[in-house]
Length: 212
Image (cartoon, rainbow, N blue to C red; front, side, top):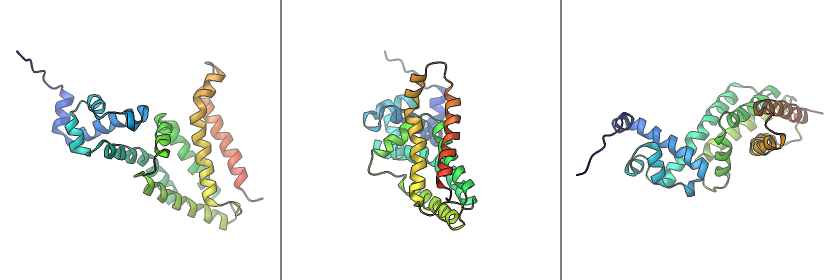
């Protein structure tokens, strides 16, 4: 005789609420994709983590590749919205550039998975976030050009070089931080390290881009 195990209350709620189902799938997929990599994450594992069937994943997102694309759009969208709002409301200035650096740094700091997420993105040639990233680059470069025209920033450095430099400096910090903490030992305060590095990054970078 076969015993049917009833759905748990969360599973029943998700079945009745398509948006809750989508969110549960995206949450599970983001965690697994970032930890294991898209290629090594089977759909069945995502389904188990989300508490849904594989058919529901295909119903809401189509293929695993489409699901990974949606995860990337959602994750990158958190940074995109914060950075775009700041750039849209600011005038081109040293203060604007400082705020842009801090926004990216805090995005990486707020969720340790963001660093691995960015690394997985860089390994792929096709990325659904490229249009959002291009929009941020264009807006950021316009603001830097404004600051160069007003002589707040040096004009002999390309705006794209300024942006790519601070992105790399922030990303590398969080990529190498686990090893640094291991070297420094258990008495080190990781949060204090973050704040000290951000302070030094801003000091070094912003002094370097001011007119001579």
